[in-house]
Image (cartoon, rainbow, N blue to C red; front, side, top):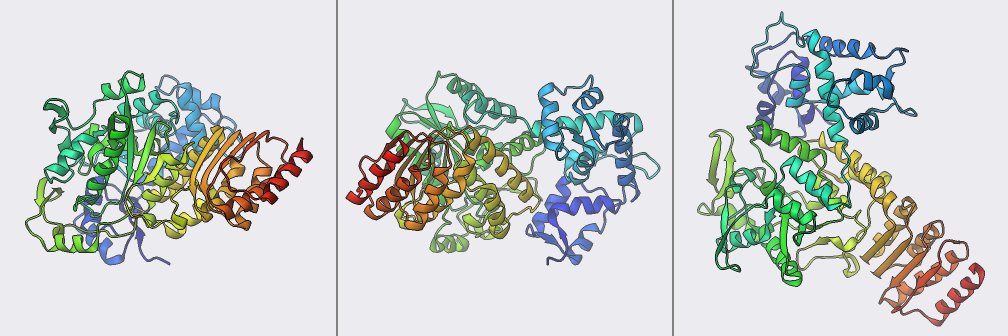
Length: 568
């Protein structure tokens, strides 16, 4: 139904035509075109003008043939896959540990087997569309490559295959979503630097917008609460490690937000003000440092020049869910866009300047909002925002995800959310999510299912707060996936008879041993109590039901008593 080449496949199309644009050339061109989802005929023709044919058109396929021939040497039975033993033989002498071998098998496994599917590995090569593909395929965008030269010297195929498998293993690496040490390790290995909430306060006071990670690294500010002490804007890895070891108290908050312009996520300082307001409440309540993850400030941004910056970004994106699903973090979502009157005022203003990266001048330049490419797509239609919220809802306590703007319009006056089961997520995601780069969609769907399975499988205790009617229905769909759930606490919810019935049908089949229900809505409590009483007749796991502080009727109490007789 769409006409043209998906933007995420543009570089692949260029390679097929025998051209060799760099990652930066492709990204810059897409930026100039407004980051379209599809490249039409006219756009594509404009881009290929002036692109030199770096290699013959049949060479990419020849390159993959070399890789395939190499892999077949280890496929002794000719079955099209490699067993764990064959994979270990191929990787002998490399840096691929036992753990990484297992990770490769998870990623590229053949259906129904624990073997690495050779076709999937070849597909992985072909679908890589960034600088990693250049490195794996032996192509250096800055080198002159003649048509008579081999794209990969045959003796180098082994090292290229090994490097690809190491990268796959890194993408599949397992970080605990409960252990603070795992979170600290991830932040250090990816060189993500958290930002101090007190620095954000300093930005608000001085009316300065966010700057990129590259510029913020050197920022210091004066802490007025500690005798005018100068402190770095970003938290050091040593400080995070000290926190993980229990030597320092801090709260880590990840921000889920929109990018309001292509060049800057928050040109109006709308998000900055909300972050300072909400983080300040936590700092005052708990008297601890608040450390914030906000991608623009904490993660190296475009344009990334050094190998370290590119590697840091690549590794971070492979495990971005960790910052939103880890039990030691909170998520604050900012789901509103700046008010129209503020946006329009800044669009007319020439004196309110925001520092942004200028791709032509290769430098940071202060520009007005009118010179940026704005993006007013709502939060709940953006692919990455949807994913971040879903990851956040997988924590054991739902209150660790908070929509932080004041005056939210919420269903039933409640903002509680429940994680979406993967099959429903996939369907809704395809219908509603929008991406600047469509190639990200498959990765997000895959990660959501992986994280969902991991979190719900391990979850034994679940606390859900403030669920409206629609989320009680979502809970009934998600509950069967919580195979090891032992206790559940429902606080302040709304439901009708239908939602209560669906929930309790799922509850009856669960292994929950303890259920606590605390609600202040008479009608919702009545429906749920009657449904629980019916479910209790067949649920042999539950041993403890606490209905304290609920407005249940005499009829509800009688129904529970009768169910107790049946189940006892």
